[in-house]
Length: 348
Image (cartoon, rainbow, N blue to C red; front, side, top):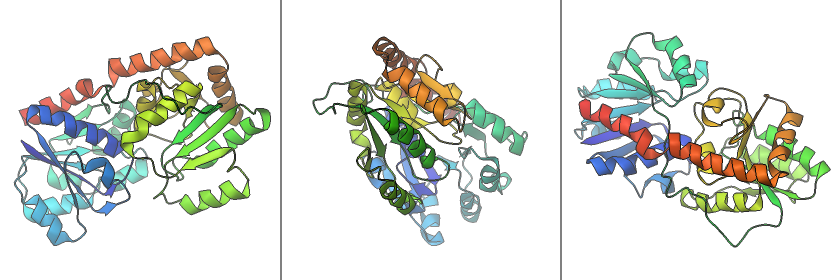
């Protein structure tokens, strides 16, 4: 079986991380996955070693790809694709993945979806299912399939290059939704009160707020305290998480809304507890008090207290580290999450 996944943006992020893992797993079942993007925002290194990747802007080139005879096509938050599929008269089964976690943006991404009569909607969380249900009524079944990862790749490991301070890390884009300014506010408070912490910001090389962040980072003189790694290859992330865990640190998310949160399960699989706001799909991923803490949105001091509750209690840290790994093995492995997708594709 040959399938094509269409998404606008080739980024280093959760959507492509999830699809990288699925594409590798699908091969075991004889399913070959190709990817079609309209814009590369630095994510090519993440996908090119696992599948055929097309980046096409011209409609003629897109049409040529769609005519390759795919057994099924999956459209991820790309309303342009509905027109393309109608243009070429694609008659095979179509699945629509709805991952945008903001209602108005999701509505725009679904505009015209009825013209392709999707067989199925896929969402990565029950939060996202509730959101999508507001917009699509009974057009097609909605199935929740969590993102899964390779737990043999993301696992606790030992490394030699561990800082002598506890690492508080932010992993992701630099934009309004990821709310990087809240991260800086939180770590600035920590900086005022402690000298045993080092903060890492990982990612953001191709983000819309890159220049703004860089300016504020320097103006506030945070650069000695907050280290910025604009590009870290996906294949090196387990080593990054290993350094965080061995330092006794944690992952800190400040995002305003998420349909899932791939970096959370990556960190947890490596034994790193996660601190995040109690919004959208976060409570589905993070078990409050067991694998990390959820704080009230915009509550900077609450986030600081949650971080300190983890990093200042060695016994609690070890318990959370073990529980984080166990939760991923129980709910978020690629074997568990991709099986549903494989069954769905094979029955189509």
